[in-house]
Image 1 (tube, one colour):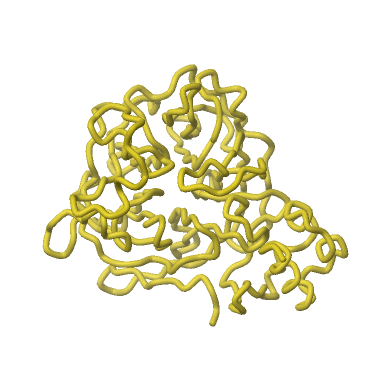
Image 2 (image 1 turned 180 degrees about the vertical axis):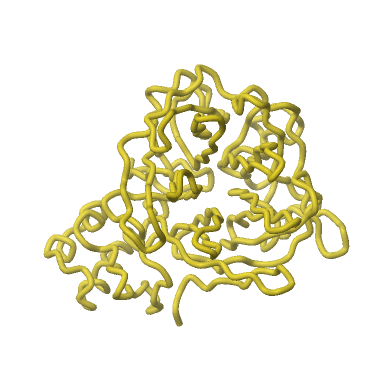
Length: 375
């Protein structure tokens, strides 16, 4: 029995998936369309018997990698749009074959979620060929900016930018990627002084290791990083130019240190950076949050400058169902919220669903670790 069938069976037994087609089909997209996401007043059971903490925000499409922002008093979520291309899982993420973006709109946490039309399609990006992975967005002087990674026609990831007068798009892409950009997972953070910075990078399928020597080297493989006693590859950070379409400087390492002030090692898979950097500021403290990848944690490090260095502090979230973990953090309604994804609907690593839950800080500024399941 497939993972998707197991999940649907659990939902049907509980009476959560009420549509007949959701209880009879082997098509995960049909399950999503019909009822398999469960309702807010009923908790779905995962494959190992645990109950999910949160329910999917939308079920009519598969969404992942949520970058949440507050624009004009509403929450907009810039997410990957997962599709099933029939590609088997591998370490380089070939199965993640997304080709367009759809923006989600919420007026309040727990309220209805609007799914926008196609915000940007790879066919409308002159330089891009495939794999429109995790995006982000920013707003400045009446223009909304969509930042996105994609592979060019040589199979190399770069980061592009597209603009719109509407937060939900459609967006028009620049004809070329951002000069000096590489790898994936852009996050654009605007500080309280109005200066914006882009954080980016991801190892393995994100190709960050291929740029370790300053230029793309296809010969560097996954196994070169899996048991490394050298300093880990770090996420990159670069100040944005005033036009928000280019870097004002060459990207540099956003260095992550251990409690002794030493760089985290590549072999420290429970703490080292893998992908999905997100910058969040609280008071005078900068929280660099990210995914550890193959150990499936969301973790954080803190610093006193947007450039770092950042000291590792601990976990934000224990592993979710599914291989990848990607997130964003936003303040709304006097609380702080963590947007994340898992595979509750499909049971497949490349068909994910966006969720949200509250993020709680202790009085000393540390973050309480979230368990994505109710025991």
